[in-house]
Amino acid sequence: MDPPYRDDDAAGAAARRRKPWLAMLAAGSALAFLLTQVPLGAVLPPRAPTGPEALHFFDHVALMRGQRNGPARPGHVRKWTGPVAVFLHDEAPRHAAEVSRILALLTRWTGVPFHLAKPATWSRNRIHLHILPHQVMVDRYGPEGALCMTSTFGNGGVLHTAWMEVSARYVDCLEHEMMHAIGFDNHWTGPMATPAMPSVLAPRYSPARPRHYSRFDEMAIRLLYDPRLVAGMPRPEALGLARRILIKRIEA
Image (tube, rainbow, N blue to C red; front, side):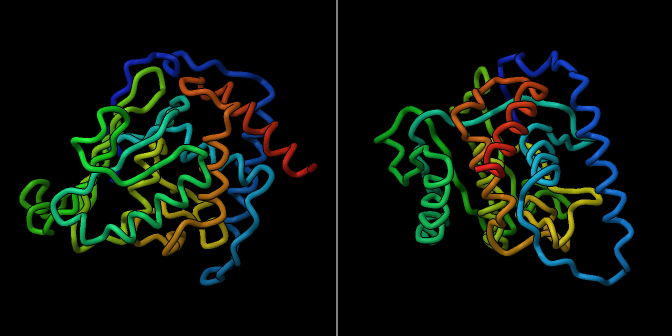
């Protein structure tokens, strides 16, 4: 489900275009065209997240904002900057072990502590996770509505609250929704969303949707939380910096 969000900062509203990115965008378009030429039914093995592919993926899922009734639009860096407490509501405590596993991965990849807590013990950065009976989700959003929903709220690109609602029938959405909760405001769609470039942010029935976080997901999470990408940084600036970081990683 496309993640609603509210961010009081306008840092990304006047994103600046820079000519060096025309070449990078052209390369991404050419690569997308080549992928569409793969024979029907062919299954490509997952590739290593490097070069223009990695940059395109990061831009698409981290620096573009999905909208329910329209195409994604440019955004800016949104992330948590301090320890985050996760509160389990409704049926969520039954899945505490799985949530803890996901939080351990996110803590390792972001450098930001994510931990389970009780609401009365934490008043700062909060993620509220509600796992609800499927019928409750249907009653709330309609039979064709959301199976899972995440809303995030921040100020100046710094996230301070996330609200997650997950149907008990679709608990396998947890990794997908957690990625939304930590600052990824778009889905992985388009001609490059194939088994060769998988992501839990792909739609549920997409061939690009793996069971667990892919190497592309890990790369994007680590990159978004690189301290050089500052919360509130406009997309063009963040994209240029992300490109330089990826190049240095390849050369290292």
